[in-house]
Length: 223
Image (cartoon, rainbow, N blue to C red; front, side, top):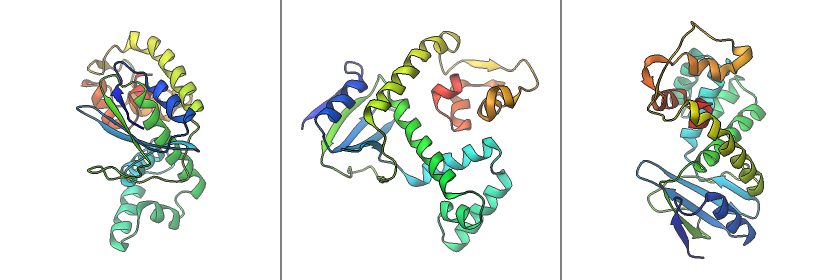
């Protein structure tokens, strides 16, 4: 199936629907000057063809933001994993720092966030590689545990795009520099992610830098 185009003229939701309705199997490459993401489709839905280490780093960062782990514990676990030649996830589980189910749940969240972010891309080209499970020049893995229903993804992405119309009136660009006007905010009201973002608003960093430092998506940081 020869499917390629530009997201400036074709909505990603249409691409998802086309692949799902035709029950296509393979990799969808989405690439711009600054980004290259790859998704895998089959009869179960869609997942991200991803770098395990990068996703695990975001998972750990999320646990730190929530207070589930401390920076000190993370440093110790990384050192232990390096000495033992063990994976970071295995070291966290073996040490009893997190449970397998919460590690898996957060891993799924991080992958889903990657997918949702793509619906905001307009300056990118896409190409579908039918029956492919790898792309030359792009290392990655397909985790069989983390497939999402295409219709559910499209519906959630549409909800976020609607919400973005309101958000972008207040944060029109990621080049904006925002200044905190109080010493702190209440984590009970704004959540641990909100608190972590607020603490990065120093009047010098722009929103893009806050996104980079927080490890969160553009959508969540701007919201």
